[in-house]
Image 1: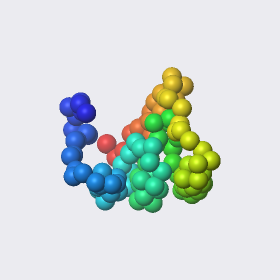
Image 2: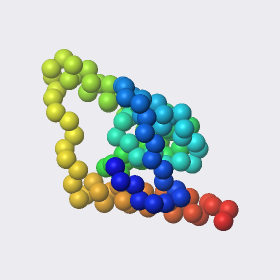
Image 3: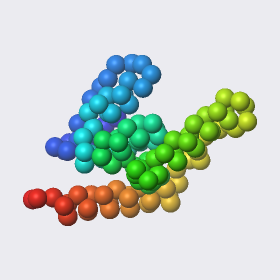
Image 4: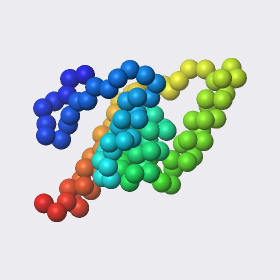
Length: 117
């Protein structure tokens, strides 16, 4: 990944293994941080730490919706394991990209508004 030069962004390489990167993010995240992830369990950990989690389709995970998201994820995982469901989400389209941009813009505007600077 190429990350643009910014004092607000950094690249960290973690070791190989199942959920190693997710675990690192969950350990490092602080209240007020923004994490972009499609991983529902990671999003739940982020929300629990009072940070913001957004998925690439523009859904903002909150205390109010994360339990339902986890339940649906677990249900679909059981369905796939039983051979009752296959495949994954549809490819991202322009509407998804716009929803993501709108959600991120709202979060950043809110952060600037509440900033002491």
